[in-house]
Length: 136
Image (cartoon, rainbow, N blue to C red):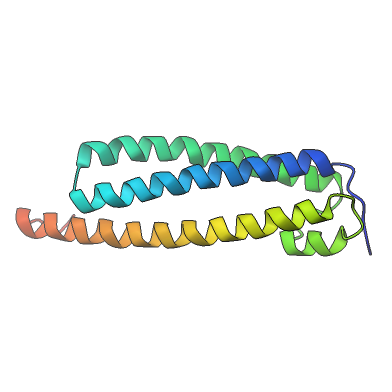
């Protein structure tokens, strides 16, 4: 079954905004990596607060995306499945470009987050050894 989206343009706008937010969030994760390496706790605290605002923005955009897909009776479908269903939509190429861009950004986010988690565990381990507190 092939579909034409009635919310094609609003959905594209949401996806473009998600890309922008994810790119900015990736920048924060890269700064966070450097802060974890240097051990600047005050800066880390500031970054965590900043991260929370990005997470809230991403959640809001994700709700908008889900709502638009629901209106087009496509809720529950993955992005890849939606691409298959909207091949004849006039904006299908733009959707494909955004799919590739988002996939790449999300992969980078996963790697950056994983690295930061490892750095944080290492930093906590060092602090634990220095303070003699194994509960950290």
